[in-house]
Amino acid sequence: MSTSSTNIPALLDVTDVSKSFGTVQVLRSVSLRVARGEVVTVIGPSGSGKTTLLRCVNFLESYDSGSIRIDGKEVGFRETGARQRRGERDLAAMRAETGMVFQSFNLFPHLTAAGNIMLGLTKVRGKSRAEARTIADHWLGRVGLAHKADSLPAELSGGQQQRVGIARAVAMGPKILLLDEITSALDPELVGEVLEVVRSLAEDGMTMVMVTHEMAFARDASSRIIFMADGGVSAAGPPSEILAADTDNERLRTFLARFR
Ligand code: ADP
Image (tube, rainbow, N blue to C red; front, side, top):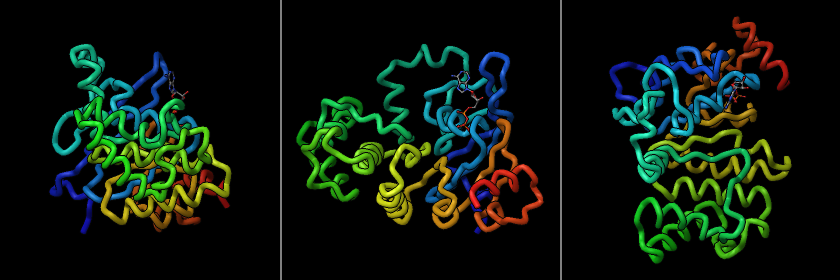
């Protein structure tokens, strides 16, 4: 079944999105469709616009033209004042539709692992503390950290902190999980445990868009890979096609050569 067929409603539908920072155009008519349950990996050289694309999908950044729909609803915003019209609480609720995990773990240092997960559940989702704790415990168990629920981030390894970051994002019940180079700040020996969590979420059917430089992981965990260059989508297709050493796309070939 082709998941990029226009007949199948996409869970995430990015159409012709362009964006400039001042005079620098960082996204050039980017289109991307992600079906429910798909794992799409975005690769490309530094500065090609990968993070900006994820930030537009997650409301952290506005865009100049095009549209971004999640589950058929226009949820992105252009620089038209939409952001001002929406309250911060509203924005937080919409951001939770697309859970985002960052390279730097971004956990609140004064809150425990469970406390970090509970915060959004109580403040944004309106759960009671007891309900939020039950959900936090569930997801901590799911990422193998049930025994660390009451630990502060400083008492956890980088890999454990990032697993809490993932648990915090999925606990909010997002439709899509956005992962932005989530293993880049980790010591090499801690990368595997984080990717293992991502893999198990993918197996459970979580829809994901991830930016990563872990090519081996991209190859076996992705349904599709998008190669970005200079703010545009330069190539898109199944991993076997995009990561082939003999691709005709010269920029892609040059990019991939760095990982060999
Ligand atoms: P990537 O994630 O592929 O490394 P980014 O999306 O981070 O690329 O950046 C794309 C381009 O946009 C880069 O040239 C970067 O310098 C520029 N850029 C990103 N954020 C900003 C910003 N807030 N202001 C100005 N330029 C930015």
